[in-house]
Length: 253
Ligand code: 48F
Image (cartoon, rainbow, N blue to C red; front, side):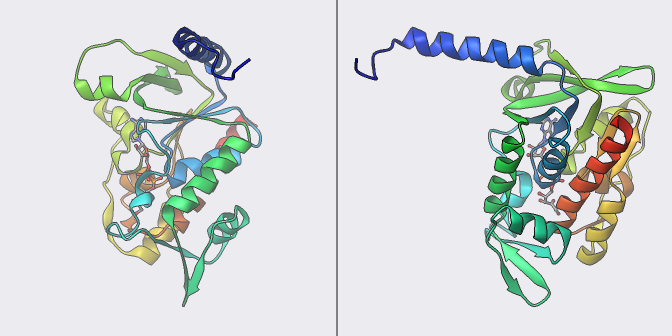
């Protein structure tokens, strides 16, 4: 029997059935991480060791802003320590120059994403998180739609994914935090001026729980607390993701 002995209907039906069984399994994960940039992926890596983690990413790929390196030169810097150790343990190639390591942001993100998948998490791309489920004061999940629908401006009602914890790792958008700000529940200070060494430390400190059920990591945390920007330096994003994972673990048990 030739391997090409299938019909187009097999492909279409298979995809629809696969999606139905995927959604049945993932309709209520423990943790939803919004944003598959370095902070979201690092958080997902740590959390997926213990919990069912669904990563929602509005773009079609993973890696977020760090893939663009510095001004599209496709490299980023990492300081020595927890982040460089983690990336190196995943096989990321790095070169040491003075006090920093340099690597391909894309390679680091692909390796991080693979490790997240290997832990059993699911990364769902093309999905825009447009709102939060909130009961009383507690964030209890997310409201989703397809990114092209969100971008079209059409009014198409969304679907919902309840979860025990939600991580805003949407980078400069700080999209979930701004939803709270719009409703008068939070005030974002806005990212500070460039000061890379300080920014690297302070963004980690700024990461953690925002309100019950909602956590923040990466540049979204910087947007919240007003910590300095750091450009194409990756370590703080990774450590921020690991830090938020600890905060979620402490709450979820
Ligand atoms: O922007 P992004 O990489 O944020 P990060 O993890 O890391 C920042 C660094 O990449 C670096 C930097 C350091 O100075 O600025 O560039 O904090 O990743 C955020 C991801 O979230 C997605 C977005 O497409 C990106 O891939 N995202 C943003 N809003 C939404 C979203 C949303 N509403 N729903 C789903 N995904």
